[in-house]
Image (cartoon, rainbow, N blue to C red; front, side):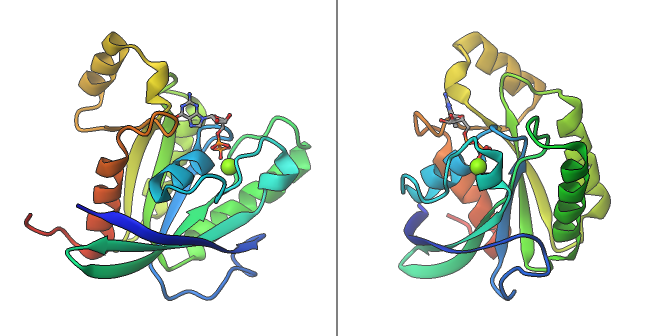
Length: 201
Ligand SMILES: Nc1nc2c(ncn2[C@@H]2O[C@H](COP(=O)(O)OP(=O)(O)O)[C@@H](O)[C@H]2O)c(=O)[nH]1
Ligand SMILES: [Mg+2]
């Protein structure tokens, strides 16, 4: 059993150049605007409002760093969660979009502390072009010491039949509801194993 025993907001950055010093393993949450990035971070650390859940583009264009302490078998582990701005803003100009895209890809490429990419996908819309684009991009850049996993969000919006269909289409997939707090333990376990290696219990 893995528990998050402490979490706090560290700082924000605009891009890789003004990001905080590296050195602690980082888990990056990425996905479309509104897919539930901030919500899943809050749910995983069990702290409402830690990551700001906001639909105002200006507010969410920053990269936000959080420190997270895990506890397993009486031992403490430290990591960082990184809440990235969403892809695909409707409300900003084209030039701002391109500027931001560049910022984001730079960050993903050059930030060496990143150990795990968690690509969040809305469980109701599992085959959007923008999501295939994101996952292709990460796969094309990923280093041997990094992992990419996909997590489906907003599971509470699916009925039983839709859930079964999704599980069948994506065997072994992680299905989470931040609102209903389901599927979170599995995600914590995947994060933990990815950062610190699999243990045998
Ligand atoms: N029903 C449901 N709504 C969710 C869930 N997670 C997030 N939301 C809602 O989706 C919207 C966007 O969430 P947010 O975490 O801000 O998305 P972000 O833009 O990716 O950070 C908010 O209105 C959330 O309340 C979920 O698991 N279930
Ligand atoms: Mg957000």
